[in-house]
Amino acid sequence: MTRRDAREAAFIALFQVDVGRMKPETAISAALSDKDPGERSVRYIHRVVLGTLENLEAIDNTVSRLAIGWTLDRMGAVDRNLLRLAVYEILFLDDIPLSVAINEAVSLAKKFGDEESWKFVNGILGKLARELKEE
Image (cartoon, rainbow, N blue to C red; front, side, top):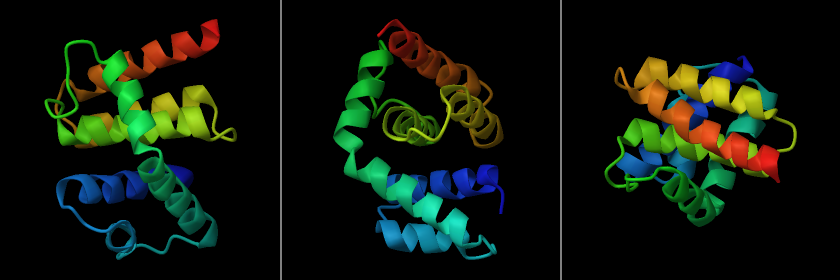
């Protein structure tokens, strides 16, 4: 499984936790049920899903601050969970470059979101990137 596939599985698991109210381990298992991920991918997925959920308040505060005029509840579930995943990678994982986290989130938004999702996700993450570069 590629890192891109693992990121997609992590997004699906986060979506299932958020929308389907699944327990994280159940959602991870469901996201991997028809895949042969390999140990490295399984570790990444667990790290990202559990890390995002452990830091959800800080992540949601960041997304809310950047998404002027939008509340988390008003965002589409795809957009909200892609932003959570990407913000976690950007703020909490040193081994993932900023540009990779943004590009991957935009790619997933194009795949899973509506026709405007990728622009919304890119705009929010672009604001975060500019803030971080100014610091």
